[in-house]
Image 1 (cartoon, rainbow, N blue to C red):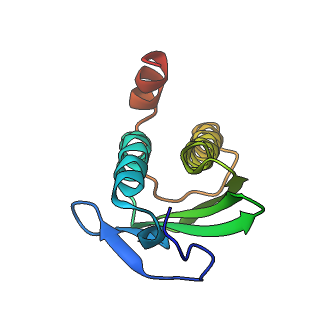
Image 2: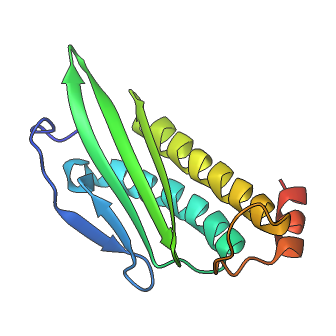
Length: 141
């Protein structure tokens, strides 16, 4: 871990083919941690793209708090898609577990939104979701 992980460092790393993914505070990580974090995020972002087909922006903010001899990793993630926003916040001592838990929460929200849209339980908005593809993707788990 970086030596000054307690300092609030809000530098952004723009990532993704369209630079539409913002990793905020991830510059606190060493190169190996950042590489693994990007691989985990990339895995989940691919799933999100398969479900939503498009999104406007994804923001993931990392804050690290030192408690005794360990760090607590606090993650807050936002996905903006059309006029819809999905949000998740997770804290964990293991960065990679926190990242995975955060994305799992987002995926669950997206699935619920798609189900609600499919059965007419929410107002109409543009998510660009193909329900058949969602069902196929769920079957591949």
